[in-house]
Image 1 (cartoon, rainbow, N blue to C red):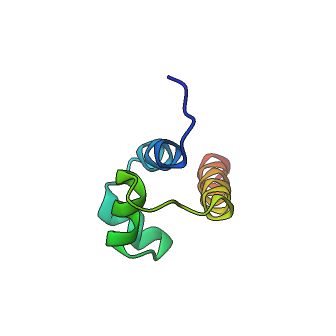
Image 2: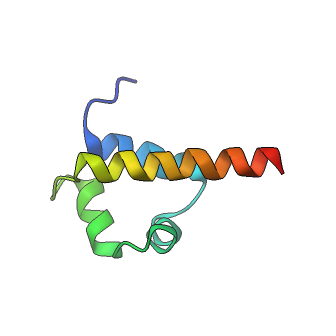
Length: 67
């Protein structure tokens, strides 16, 4: 599957964490409605924010593996 849209990247990022949308929102302290709008394509997600979220998830996963 080729991911070309930020909403698809966000959905894949959330799925990779194993979190549902509510847990994901609480983890990143982002309103549920905002993430829902991003995932549905109703609002465009800022690319810098997607990059920061991806970075945080990667670092958290590395910390879990190393501990």
